[in-house]
Length: 403
Ligand code: EPU
Image 1 (cartoon, rainbow, N blue to C red):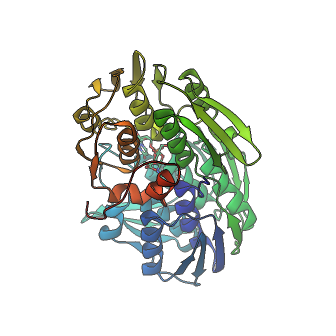
Image 2 (spheres, rainbow, N blue to C red; image 1 turned 90 degrees about the vertical axis):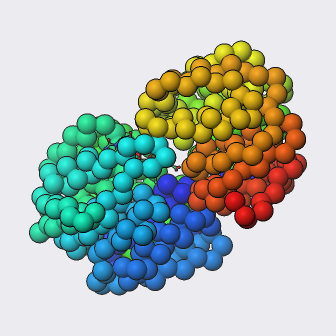
Image 3 (cartoon, rainbow, N blue to C red; image 1 turned 90 degrees about the horizontal axis):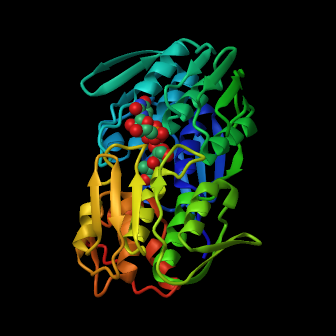
């Protein structure tokens, strides 16, 4: 099976299209709800968005309505990444405050403080942030934590700023490097993306381009975890091993055999996963998005594993659902102690978010009897066809569309 382009890159590239007028063509864009919603947000601003297969075109006009309304931001927090490009190009933005979500408290203080350092000013009233800037001016911004979203907002704002911006302690995820490559193709001057220091020389203007979205490492991990759970051998075409080195080390420790193929990876698993300890960290550490998949593998592991979640305070909420399926897990604060059990038992459960939803699906692959996953629409936000792909690998899984 073949993975799509990364959701978490495609959404930011779509936002970055606001930085220039003309026709953009993005290839490898997954057909998922989040992309549709980002498209709706851009259309509301005046952009014409069209997707056919994995090709997405965006026709961006000279002027846009620089506003992200509550109804759209509330549905998808990632909408906040329009703030940087709107301020960078138009000097004005009105964006709904995103609020928290299933991972708990999710502030955007680093986005705002960084943009303020570039010269933007913000007021917040009635649930909206209003940002203003004459032309932004480059400076050195030291992020207190390598936030993905804050790095992206700053990068997109700085590309049209006057002078040089340096982002220190920048996030290093492959999706950041993809965004920088896109901006550079547009005529930007971004160096160091993928490292913790990104340097941006502001330019006077940018132009619309074509771009291929980087493959989705989280989708790749999901199919690898499915193989770890159910056993067998699968080629994950399109997967880039260099984008998930720590994960591959962990999966190797858990007994999965992973080798490169001409265009991706081949994953082989025999028998129960070996229990290991894992801690999530910003890239290049083990990503927090892999955490529910790893906890699910450990739920049927051969002994005891401890998982420490260091990125999001509230990302263990799905564990109660796994316990309804017979998993033996004790979660407290940032730590989960997982005692592997011999088998899981199918039950009705609820998907609280995209990745936990996918993890419950792979738990259902090996559970005795039927697992019915409610709120499955969360899974559709991030996966083009999880059900169809797993079914093509031999899983008995179907989508009723009612949950
Ligand atoms: N944080 C702050 N202040 C800020 C920004 C972040 O305190 O101003 C904190 C967050 O609360 C969190 C940590 O910093 O504790 C990391 O947040 P980050 O900003 O790095 O994450 P994000 O940009 O909000 C993206 C992905 C997530 C992924 C994280 C971490 C998108 C749309 N989302 O979120 O992906 O888990 O990076 O890698 O790119 C998903 O795809 O399902 C998903 C949730």
